[in-house]
Image 1: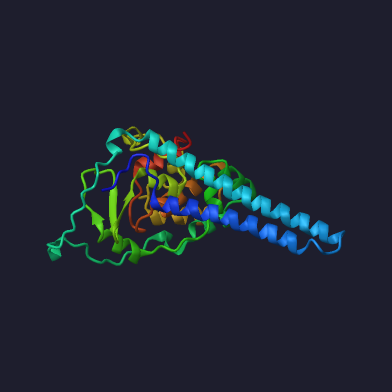
Image 2 (image 1 turned 120 degrees about the vertical axis):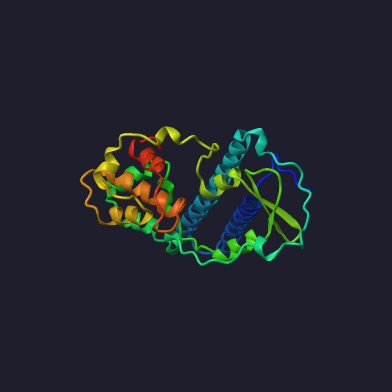
Length: 278
């Protein structure tokens, strides 16, 4: 039986524990280093020791700040979730009677972001002023993200361990004897985005969009087309360069698909008419 109200995702709990352990280790190392150097000469040794202590303090403060930020985000998302996001206690039934047709079959799928080059391309393509504008957006912190290898085998194995339950807005997986939830709250923590639930995109279906008309006139806008336009366009406007970078990040990284997939017109219009910053 697993209760979800006010629970924190397993991955977040592990991260918080790791961060706290990291702070303890840094503090312990600082104390040991100070005691080891206490018998040395003054002058230069005092200066180097002071510099080292300041560096350790910055590391500790950074870890504390990230820890508080993640906890606050988790609480905010959890409090904003509607009541139907709260799952009933899970009575997990292990099924051994699945037929071959009911099992998830393996399939080779290569997504554009699998090479971890989207953020690298954005950093290299944008000018200094354009990167500054991009950092001012809600996606700005992605410029500092590190490459993360996509583990397709892990995802495939997780899908084989999905637990069936009533709440369609959550996915549950059974690893060993433990059940793990993936919902909007966990996605908010992993991505760092402020998520408030499903949005009605129908109002963005028909919009005048000068941005799309300029760069994709009479062209089917696919995932591949967005990447090509971003990489090979000579942007005269910093505003349009940042918009194209955001569109590239969204379509080729955050919600990426195969290169031939058509980008929804709602996504194009949200970015083109500056609705994505609200």
